[in-house]
Length: 257
Length: 262
Image 1 (cartoon, each protein chain N blue to C red):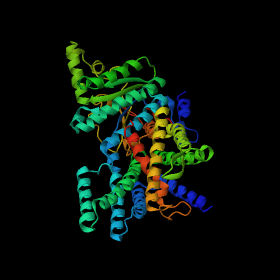
Image 2 (spheres, each protein chain N blue to C red; image 1 turned 45 degrees about the vertical axis):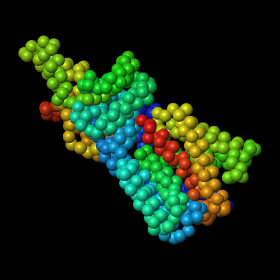
Image 3 (cartoon, helix red, strand yellow; image 1 turned 120 degrees about the vertical axis):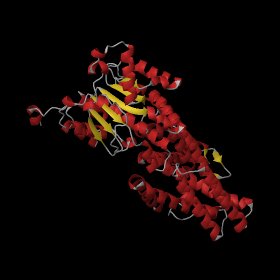
Image 4 (cartoon, chains in turn cyan, green; image 1 turned 180 degrees about the vertical axis):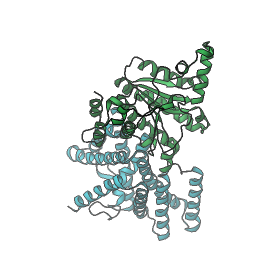
C-alpha cells in the first residue's frame, strides 16, 4: 500500500514538473535529484568521509547542469575540471587512483544522463520528455509481468536472483510496441520500425542500467540504495534504467530532422 | 471544402478548430511569404547549440506547409537561406543543407499526399551538386501536382533576383520601350505566380531582409514575436485572420463596398 501511494505521488509530481515547470526550475529540480542520487551512490561506493561525499554530490549536480546546456558544454573546461577534481581526491583527500575514479564515476553515471534528460526537454518539449519516461516505465512493468508469468531461466543469477530472460524479452517487446504506438503522436513523421527499434534499444540498455545498479548494491551488501522513497527504496533504485536509456534517446532525437 | 480539409487534420476539441472556423475562405491571401526567423534565438534561450534551433524549425516547416495547403492558399514561399547566409559558420551552413536534404526525403510523401508542387527560387546553380540533385528530384516528383505551390527561397536575395531578371531581359533582347512592369516580372524567379498578399516574419524583427523585394510592393506585413521553431498552424491561421481584418487600398482610397464589408 505504501508502495502504491508513494508511487502515485511520485508519478504525479514527475508529470506535473515536466508539463508545467519552466525550464530553469526543471534544471534546478533535476540537479537536486542528481545530488540526492549521488548521495546514495557514495554510500554504495564506500565513500564515507563527509567532505568527499559533499564533493561528489556537488560535482554531480554541476555535471547535470552543464550537460543540460549543450551550448555551454566545453571539452577543455570539462578536462580542466576533471583534472582539478582528481587532484583534490588524490592530493587533498589522500585517495588512491581507484578511489578517485570511483568518485568521478558518480558524476558521469548520474549527472550526465540526468543532464541529457533536461536537454531532451529543452530541445523537444514536455511531450517527448514524457514519452521517454513512459517508455522506461512500460519496459520495467512489462519485464515485471512477463517475468512473473513466463520467467524460467535467470538472466544474471549472480547479480539479480529475480531477473529472467523471459522477463527481459517481455520488456524489449513492451517498449517496442509502446513506442511504435505512442511515438508517432509525439515525434511526427517517424517510421514505426525506427521507433520500435529505439524501444528495443532503450529497453536493452535500461536492463543493463538496472543490473549495473543491482551490482553496485550487491558489492555494498545493501538491498535498496536508500530509504528515501517509502516502499520504493532510494532514488537510484527508481532511475537506474532511465540513466542508461536517456543518452540513447537523446542521440536518436539529435539525429532526427 | 478547405474548412473540412483543415478540420479533418485538427484533432477534435483542439482550440485551433474554433480559430479555423473564423477564416473567410473566399478572401484568403493567394500568396503567403514567410521569413523564418528566430531559430538561433530559440536555441540560445534553451542553452542549446544554434543548429538545434534549425532542427526544431523543421517541425514548424512541416506544420506550416500542411496547414497552408489545407487552408487552400495557392502559393507559399519560405525564406530558408539567403545569399548572405554563407557568412555563417561553415558547420551551421552544412547542417542547414543537410537538414534541407533530410526534410525533402522525409516529407516527399506529405507533399505528394497534399498535391503540393515544390519549387525553388534563388541562385540554385551555386549550391552543392548533391543538394541540387535532391532538389531537382523533389521538383520533378511533385511537378504533376495540382495543389499549392510551395517555393523555398535558397541562396536567394531580392536584389540578386532583380539583377538576374534584368540580365535575362537583356539576353532575351527585350527593347527598352517594350519593358514594363508585367514584362519585367516575367523574368523573375516567381514568373507567373501571384505576388504575396501577406508576408509573415517571426521573431519580432521589423525588417524585410532582402526578401522578394519586387513582389512585396503591396503585401500586408505581419510580424509576430513567436520564434520560428514555436510557429505552428494556429500562428499561421492567426496571421491570416489578422490579414482579413486589414483594409487593402493599393494606394487608392477605400471603396464604399469595402467600407461596409463586415
